[in-house]
Structures are given as C-alpha cells and as structure tokens.
Length: 245
Image (cartoon, rainbow, N blue to C red):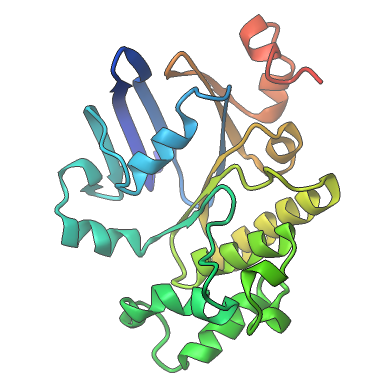
C-alpha cells in the first residue's frame, strides 16, 4: 500500500473549554489534491497552522515523510518548512515590498534549495510566469487586484518548489470569475510542480473541481471521507448541510 507523504494522527487542540480538534486524523498521498471542508470555527485553519509549526497541538502526531513535526527543534522545522508551500488566507503579501522583493524573501535564507544555475531574478520571473504575472514584477501589492495578489502569493509559495502546498481558503474574498481562475491555476500548478495539495475551503465549487478526495470536519474529527460525488450524494443530514445552496 502506498505510504502517505503527510499523516496526522489523533490531533487534539483546545482553547480553554473550546475543544477545537478532538482526535483528528488525515493522510495525504503523493500527487493528491485533498480538500477539507468544515463550518467556520471548526478548526480547519488551526489544523493547517499546526502543520507548519505556527501553532502547537496539545497531543497527537504530525508526520511529513518520516519527520514528526511535533518533536522537531526550530532548526529542523525550518528545514522541513522549505518542502511546504503555504498560501495564506488573504494572500499575506508584504505591503512595503514590491512583487519581486516578496518573492525574493524566501530565497534569501534558502538559496541552496533551488536550481543553482539560475539567478534570483530568473527564479522570480519563472515563478511569476507560472501564475501568468511576470509583468507585475516591479509593482507594489497595493497596485494589484485581489486575484492578482492571490496569484503572486501562490508564486511565492512555489518558488522553493515544495513537495506539499497548503491552501487556506484560496478563493475567499474573490469574485466568482476570479475564483474560477484561481481554481484552474491550482490544477495547473499541481501538474507543473507535481505537488501534493491540502486545500482548506468552504467553497463547494472549488471542492468539486479540485478534489481527488475530501474530508468533512465536524465536531473536531474527520466525520466522513470520500470523493466529491460520494459526499455530495450522501443522505446523512450533517453531510448534506455542506452541499446545500
């Protein structure tokens, strides 16, 4: 049986009396687009922050390949993070930096992780070309539309050519046409970079187009797993609630 590239086992995290994750489990396989859906406040973004070490779980394990994130020291975690691209909700570009400088930022400490035969500028241009925005290289984030900012943020997430990409609500705040463009771009990125993707979303259209498999997060656990077709035709009321218009 194929081994997962990412595995979460029995993850628990609470904020006071609010038990956000109550034994959450997940397996992400190489080349897969795995979508996680859940209500607002269900712990989706908390879980993804635990994956990159921005938040500590109270118990459980998170393994990327053979490395347990929970037990890694700071230096080891920094090395492992270079294999993970993170598209933040809202893009999270640095407002005081140009597009070029935003993309150069992850290269400054990790230049040894990318093709040594290419200059920093060549790497930046290549990443922007892959999201169709090479012409924006010297613009400021404020000069870009919301959709363009999301594309630049994706280029930044990809510049170290990570094995895994984490998407936190990639279509939030975008108009329907731009959201569809971002979804198609995500599919292109998977083929171009051969990535495994974990996508946190409440966007049913995004899940339908992008997912190979889905997990519904209910009451802090993976309530049900399956393909979009399997889940969208379920007669379980808790599952049906996610697919109602």
